[in-house]
Image (cartoon, rainbow, N blue to C red; front, side):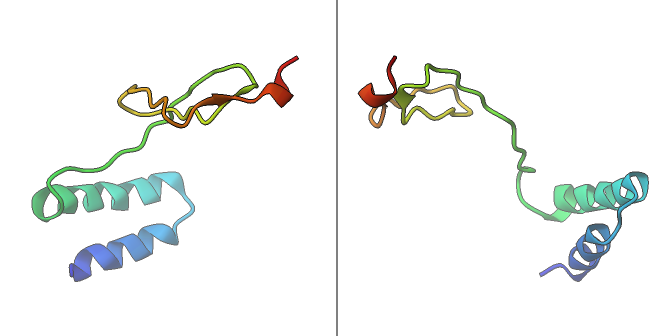
Length: 78
């Protein structure tokens, strides 16, 4: 447990000003790099555009297509 990290994250959660919050988040990132996980996780939006009748096809960050659970819903076909 990292008391300094927990204190800073609590402070950051209570700050509405973006620039003030950014300063604390930079400190938190430094702590994570020095004594935290091996890598800092990040999230990105993944888009998959299909016809409305294609169901079960999910966007995947590796762009690997999983077709096991994909189907065509005939009720949505026009």
